[in-house]
Image 1 (spheres, rainbow, N blue to C red):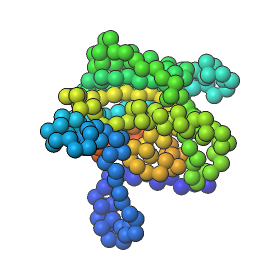
Image 2: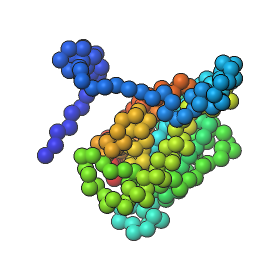
Image 3: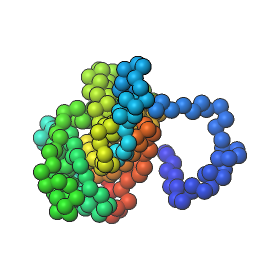
Length: 258
């Protein structure tokens, strides 16, 4: 048995209640603004002038749209046999149409090389091209480091997978985080909106790392097929996550978690 709690419009109540009994008095709160080692002071030699430091300072934000692949054939034995189901293709199409309606221009398109993610990416990209919200000649970054895996030991599910999974997958998924999660380069002059299509475990780990929560908590997050998680990285190193696993644009009958 488990309980599911649906929170609707509770912000005001939570804030009011949090100011009294619900406050976590003993919980230390820290934030490392140089988590990506791209603070301007980290990019210059010791003793550099303030002018030199300012030249290396990020000035615009990046927004990453992390998209989980659509529903796929669970009975397949190989990756190629785990392709999208008809519903999974429809989920990807609906997600692509939703992204196209947000009024944004997308600059980068990154996708895992696994079949279910690659197919999801192709369908989404086609919808973005139809709406002319991504460059026609955009170079799709297909990468193995975004493939599904076991990022680290999960707490409280301490034996979710054998230890060797973490040893083989953990470094790869962490390297993906370091490659794609960072503040904008100091030469970037316009905010960017970037799409990353990959897998539930990878995205859940990214969420925990991005907000500097213990990464071992990744398995406490659930993501629907085709859902979107938005991560905003500010030029000063602050990070905000919104709409974790957002699927509100999908009809109820299309929502799955396989």
